[in-house]
Length: 465
Ligand SMILES: *[C@@H]1O[C@H](CO)[C@@H](O)[C@H](O)[C@H]1NC(C)=O
Ligand SMILES: *[C@@H]1O[C@H](CO)[C@@H](O)[C@H](O)[C@H]1NC(C)=O
Ligand SMILES: *[C@@H]1O[C@H](CO)[C@@H](O)[C@H](O)[C@H]1NC(C)=O
Ligand SMILES: *[C@@H]1O[C@H](CO)[C@@H](O)[C@H](O)[C@H]1NC(C)=O
Ligand SMILES: *[C@@H]1O[C@H](CO)[C@@H](O)[C@H](O)[C@H]1NC(C)=O
Ligand SMILES: *[C@@H]1O[C@H](CO)[C@@H](O)[C@H](O)[C@H]1NC(C)=O
Ligand SMILES: *[C@@H]1O[C@H](CO)[C@@H](O)[C@H](O)[C@H]1NC(C)=O
Ligand SMILES: *[C@@H]1O[C@H](CO)[C@@H](O)[C@H](O)[C@H]1NC(C)=O
Ligand SMILES: *[C@@H]1O[C@H](CO)[C@@H](O)[C@H](O)[C@H]1NC(C)=O
Ligand SMILES: *[C@@H]1O[C@H](CO)[C@@H](O)[C@H](O)[C@H]1NC(C)=O
Ligand SMILES: *[C@@H]1O[C@H](CO)[C@@H](O)[C@H](O)[C@H]1NC(C)=O
Ligand SMILES: *[C@@H]1O[C@H](CO)[C@@H](O)[C@H](O)[C@H]1NC(C)=O
Image 1 (cartoon, rainbow, N blue to C red):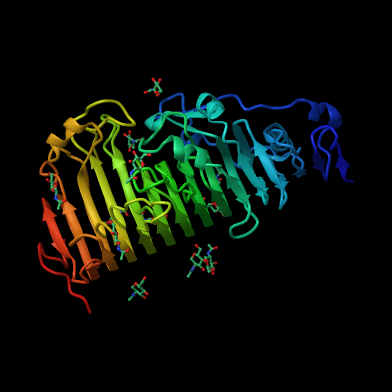
Image 2 (cartoon, protein in one colour):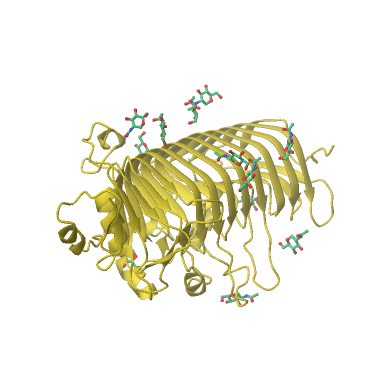
């Protein structure tokens, strides 16, 4: 029997779990402020301590939430529905509703489905979010929404339909020329989770990075649409949607990303420390490429990234005369901090160690990026670190690049600029066809401290077919 108490919180339960429904509904949940840890320690959950399917089942329930309207905060009633139906049930936010989210979200989902067929509209109340977002210790960041749990599905209902409207323009304007501004929240964070499927989900104007995944395994995200286009004509290439990334990961094992369209102002995908066993397929990335790192920012906590397979990727730099656009360093970009630590993250750091290995790129097309493939051993933000470009001991090895084509806006197609302290090695290339967008000449390859490079010679023009 359909039970409705819309007058109280607009939560409709198709099956009632609460004997005293009104009592259940009258507790309005708010999420307490959480902090996602930088390092795993004995007090932090590890993947082996994740809740397992052995947890007792509760009754399967379905909750449907309709918005309160008139700009009132829907977060409490959505959190209430997750409390009622988030263990073994389904929570549906139907289309075409827009839900006002003016307070932070934290959800725990176990063997549950969250249908976001409408749009969650995160208010541009910058002061609230700067003060009250959840904290992410990595790079002193913040996030507006955390989901934690196992065996759950988040579904947007259709291509370019349900998901998030981050109302990011207010953030883009405030951040002009300033990267990693404190308190600017990541739209969605997946934390301490296993067996996650996110499908047909859209991000309209994400506030900052669209997705952050940390301490999780077995995540699939398919048919993801991200539109972080600046709409302010005052925007230009230096302030355009700064830090609007697609997805960044740390301590994530087994991830599959497929069918993404991203238009942003920074990295499309950026795996950070301990991102392993990942498959990416069919991405269109405008405004940012596939960027490994930055790595080596935190000394004493090495970053290991291995077994990443990337295929069928298009990366473009598009700069609009009216609205600007981000410069794109490369389609395949590997960036490690210098070997000398200065300052504190996010704007400082360095001196960290680790290894990126076993990375394969198949079928990459670039359009007017600075270079197509770029290993950069000299990433830093404190200007004095520029004197230490050859000090990084971070290792890059066992990379395969097959079928890389398109145009670059400099003479350099492949730039292997590796550290003297730890030369890159075992880099294999085949089927390269890169031209300079200005002259239509073939692009060249440049090496520094690169050993055992196959299929490519330093300084030579690459063959075009
Ligand atoms: C993830 O799914 C696998 C396969 O169904 C299952 O064995 C495992 O227990 C699940 N893990 C968790 C944490 O639910
Ligand atoms: C994070 O940034 C805020 C604002 O600048 C600052 O007050 C705080 O000390 C920083 N925290 C860390 C751990 O760096
Ligand atoms: C990964 O999660 C999916 C559900 O999203 C599940 O079907 C699959 O069995 C899991 N795989 C492993 C290796 O746990
Ligand atoms: C771009 O925007 C920044 C910040 O708003 C401003 O300082 C800079 O002068 C602008 N550059 C151009 C070329 O308009
Ligand atoms: C990716 O898109 C193609 C073409 O629309 C579709 O056939 C395929 O099933 C999609 N992949 C996933 C995992 O949804
Ligand atoms: C690739 O993904 C896009 C969505 O980003 C989809 O429209 C297209 O059909 C997919 N193509 C293939 C071949 O999977
Ligand atoms: C590499 O990752 C893929 C995808 O997760 C996985 O199927 C494969 O077993 C991994 N290979 C190794 C050698 O771990
Ligand atoms: C990565 O895993 C290693 C252990 O394999 C650990 O020592 C290191 O601290 C981890 N790095 C991060 C960034 O968590
Ligand atoms: C990395 O590649 C090497 C050979 O190139 C292979 O022996 C090894 O199993 C791979 N490791 C992973 C984790 O994929
Ligand atoms: C090379 O990449 C292009 C563009 O992605 C694709 O159309 C072509 O089929 C690929 N060639 C091979 C041999 O896979
Ligand atoms: C490539 O980008 C440069 C700016 O970096 C721009 O001047 C040029 O017009 C672009 N070329 C094409 C073909 O888009
Ligand atoms: C390589 O890095 C050095 C710094 O060590 C820098 O001076 C040089 O310009 C870089 N070369 C290219 C082609 O990017």
